[in-house]
Image (cartoon, rainbow, N blue to C red; front, side, top):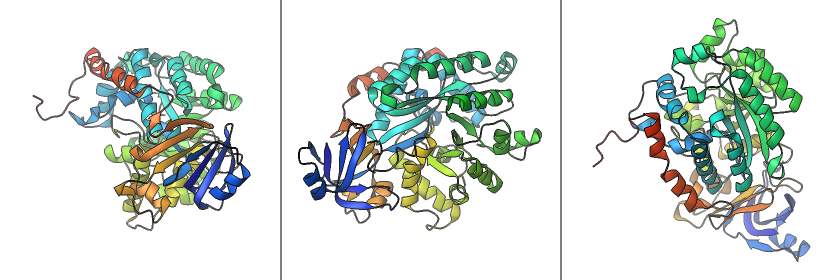
Length: 465
């Protein structure tokens, strides 16, 4: 199949942009990239899809997602709670802890549908709890056609600590069961969906409530199986305070002391990481998932993204979760990443759209452990790409297709999504999911979850009549 007449942002080593360009897809791979006329002559019998007027770019990779929270979109903005701990223990945990497996699968379908429709072709899920039903969510990923690294929860919080903190029982499990269930899920699902699915350890944050020897055990198991690890780290000043109380210079150094750093680890946030941390992250090949929209909503950061990049850290992008960010639209969050970095530095020269697009594609692929096969449009790489239809007032004229993609495009402008050589969306119709059924399912569930959890204060402070 040949996708012809597009403006192709290749992200190849020369970062070439091909006008009137084309891609040839054979199986799950890109067979050729070049000018339309040349490739049509080389592949005269190939089925042709005309994407004239579209920007063609690698699929976006979201490196920090909470699928179960998609059904909780916006619940942070009713009665706003004063701090992160109150938000987590009094609102989010009770809601998520009251899910059935069917609720969690419905939330996952909604999140995956949203990601596909806004150009995300691969993602890292950070914390799939036991009660969500790992198999059901893995099956959603496989049938939808998306590429996913599913982080299954690994935790070590004692029952005494759980009850002292008011930790909802539905969001707690034993250390032994959480580790064993992750390994069992890895045995069942690793490589499913024609290689699209990975199973990772999704560790809870290294915090006072947790037995830190968990991370030594998990890191050893992950290395033995070449599994990925993802964990929230260095989010708030209290994280560094905790690390220092144990004799470490910082939360990042604590993570290194327990084996968490390395090329198969993705750390979420790192908003309080400093220059020494950045050098440690770079030297160990650890990836960081930068979540600019979520951080802004939560009044965290902004993270020192340009400093990390300058130090050689592989910084990718993530949308995080719908309760605070409200969107899983990585196109939108690329724009926010650029704006927040410039605002932090006090100059528009701090970062450009080219760097941000690298973060969402090449760096995301590297974070997934797939840097050799994803992230750019080159012969031999996996056929994961999207097209953006620029036939819209807010996208014209297109002086610079990279700037248009990063600053002007929105998720609703994505027309076509191809993953592993399969056309998953065309003309904005997702071919692998029943969109109406997904929306109807969620619409019949979300209020019931809140009622079951006994959580209120989720709606607007203004009167509803």
